[in-house]
Length: 34
Image 1: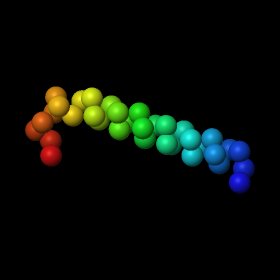
Image 2 (image 1 turned 90 degrees about the horizontal axis):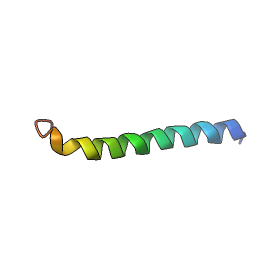
Image 3 (image 1 turned 90 degrees about the vertical axis):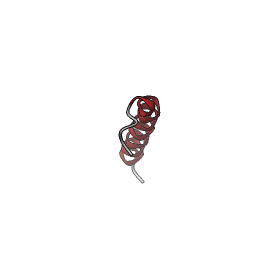
Image 4 (image 1 turned 180 degrees about the vertical axis):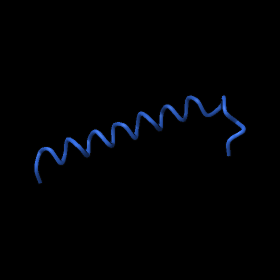
């Protein structure tokens, strides 16, 4: 596998984790959502 492939994979994973943490932080303030 090329190094670029791993960099893209790492960026997507990192963005996913940031989004997950962001959702956890903002979840209690938006209880109208399921």
